[in-house]
Amino acid sequence: MDYDKLSKDILQLVGGEDNVQRVIHCMTRLRFNLHDNAKADRSQLEQLPGVMGTNISGEQFQIIIGNDVPKVYQAIVRQSNLSDEKSAGSSSQKKNVLSAVFDVISGVFTPILPAIAGAGMIKGLVALAVTFGWMAEKSQVHVILTAVGDGAFYFLPLLLAMSAARKFGSNPYVAAAIAAAILHPDLTALVGAGKPISFIGLPVTAATYSSTVIPILLAIWIASYVEKWIDRFTHASLKLILVPTFTLLIVVPLTLITVGPLGAILGEYLSSGVNYLFDHAGLVAMILLAGTFSLIIMTGMHYAFVPIMINNIAQNGHDYLLPAMFLANMGQA
Image (spheres, one colour):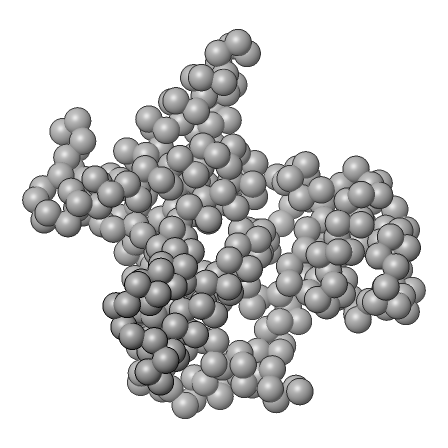
């Protein structure tokens, strides 16, 4: 496939580069935010070799490419002034709340999926090797491979922090520092001791943030506003030092005192809700989700399940949503 030619044709048929506010990609689709969707020629786009179809979800114009989508995206970036980072947060088009939520989920979770998929496969292979007696549990090989498989899930807040910062338009390395702080071993040990914790007289809720999803997303969302606010009032010669310093000093304690515990509670309720549904109406829930999943994908709403699935796997070691999605895919095969 000639990716350069395909990307050039796509840019032309979506109304030209001037009509593009932003372009990102997920696992199979190019996702454009256009100034005017009416300028995109859907019929001509769908006839291009390498294009499987088009779809409009909310304000987002989607072009279905398949597994080659990263290469097509890179070709578009090479031939234009467009990029995800440059245009992040720049869209002036009004979105409804639901579209905005799906856009955030797509932008945050898509970049980290390869790490999650790779680590998940390794965890599965290690479990099979132990079950069939091919590997001794607690052997050095087992310990090392377990660390390889568990690493991405244990430090999931770190991955999410950098991805979320890019989406929210803040510094990804400061975001990583925020995640590293709440994952610090000394803080984890302090929580594990079971004694009351306080910070300058304010109570800190004992919570463990490894393998969690929602707390760090809330923290980085708040950090993006704090960082921009501090930047606005800081002299240019001092921005490099003062902006990250005060961002960390404000956001990390705020996360430990309020944001983190709230996010942890929300994550637990989401996980418990899904588990309750499948425990008490397992077959019906599975049939409903598997039967409607293709329609859900067409609307782009399937991204709403991603944080729930990752949270379930990280917290419980299993998830009920993925098997339903597999059934939907196998039914189409």
